[in-house]
Every structure is written in C-alpha cells, then in structure tokens.
Length: 294
Image 1: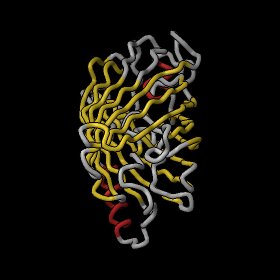
Image 2: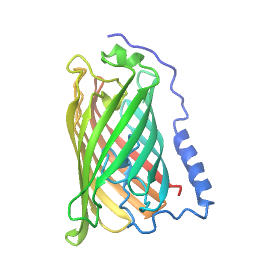
Image 3: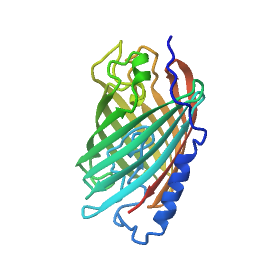
Image 4: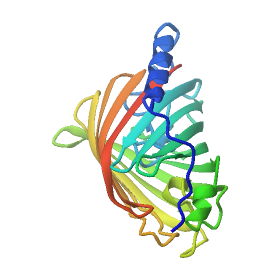
C-alpha cells in the first residue's frame, strides 16, 4: 500500500491550549460578558468535535450559547483527542443569535504520530432551532443543521480510495430534552441525532469510497445525568459508515463535564474510536475547554 508522506508534525502540539488560555485571559478582562442571564447553567451544552453546539462527539439540538431571544452570544473552544497512533487537535468559534440560529467554524489538525505528517480540514456549521425548549417545552427541542467540511490537502484521502477528496456536507436533525429530577432526584438529559453523511473519519479521509458513495443515515445518541448545576456525567454513541472498506468503527465515549459558571466549561472523556485507517483499537483521552466570550 502506498504511503504518502506529508509535512513533519510540529512538536509543539500544545499550541491550541496556549492559544485558548490566552483567549480566556483576554475574555476575563471584558466586564460585559453577561449574555444569557435568563437560561439555566449547563443548558447551552458544549461545542462538539466539529464545532456545533452539543456533546463531545454528537451535535445536539441545543445552541452553543446562553443567548435569549433578544441576545447574541459568541463561544470559543479547543479540543484534543490523544489516541494510540493519532492525535486530533481542534480549534473553533461559534455564535448563536436570538436563541434561534447558530453558526460555527472549526479547524481540525489530525496528527499521524506513527507515520508522520498531518491532515487539516475546516468545518463550517449552521444550525436552526425548529421547535421547543430543552427544559420548558413538553416535547424535546428540535434543530436542523449542516456541516460543510473542506480538506486542505486531499492527497491522503485520494490514496485510501475516497470518491471525493476535497469537500462534503453532513446534514442532521437533533432532538434534546432535560427531565428535571427524573433520576433519583437528579436531572437527566438525552439527545438523539440522525445524520446524512458521506464522510470518512469525520471527512479527514475524504467522502465516499469503494463500498458506497451515496449519503447514508447514521444514528447518534447521548445521555447524561446532571448531579448538580455544575457537574454532568454521560455517555455518547456515534454510528459511522464504512465507505472505504477499511473497517471504520462506530465511536463511543464516556465523559464528565464541569461547568463552574456560564463562561467556562471543562470536559474530560475516555474515547473508544476503534479502527482508523487500518490502525486498530484506537482509544484515548478527550479533553475540551469551552469559553463564552459574550
């Protein structure tokens, strides 16, 4: 099998964290960061791995900010997933408008620790809340969204047999609901998402392949217990297509999130990501830091 050598991986892989800590330090000097006073803490969710508001692996129906119907909010986040043979670094920002629309931008840098090199892609997201409120409506909050994914260099995607080594778009519908006091007095939150996708490994290995080059509907789900307004423990599942015939596995994580206030949240997870491009049983720590700028 041909191996395409890319640029040498930079050793200073912690740069995203340094950047984000500087960003948060700047943010703490801004005294006007008070958006979303009317929403309950924790109900904005996080920025998931592709930038949309949600959990870690899965986009939820929630928007990323605490904005009310008369407010705008802006978030920044960084995420790192350390696997046996790979490392994924993510930087992103999102903005939500009047508790109705969310836009997001995320950059992936996927380091090939064993082979050397990296894969980069940008993800542009859009989400629209169709119905409901995660807490107060009888039925779940429902949103529809899309994620447009653009590879910087598609040479590796082409080498592994992707039909499209340039760009692709995922479309999803998500439903999310919090049940107050539902589990031994603790709040319970769940989410289900249906995603139409052609992406191989989030799009990092292109879109479509020898097994399939059409859209397929993938199921995704999350559930968490909110032990307090500041602490949540949960699990996520994400079904994935095997377009390339390389045995792409579904993803699973178990996470704990600490939300000290509406401006910051920290998430630590153990991720089981299975087979990635022939490297089997990829697993490791997922660490994410979210900050609401205003």
